[in-house]
Image 1 (spheres, rainbow, N blue to C red):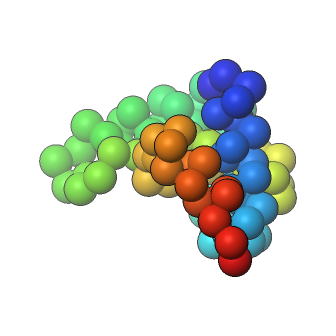
Image 2 (spheres, rainbow, N blue to C red):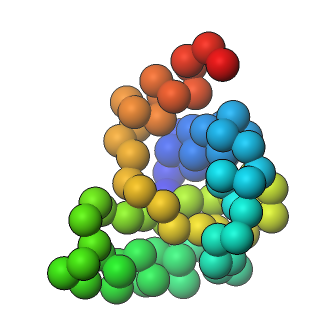
Length: 81
């Protein structure tokens, strides 16, 4: 993940809060393991929306969530609370 996208995910996570961003989600110690897990989930016919790995600003590990475009992340981070 490039630096800009990583920073956007971290900022969006902070804004969303610990419970929503980290909470009870599975923690992956490294980006590559989270990416592999997301890829596997995306191959399942029951997966309705694309998933992606993202860095967590709270536990400093990786989680899997709905894929968001850079524009969507920017809009979310820039939106007033």
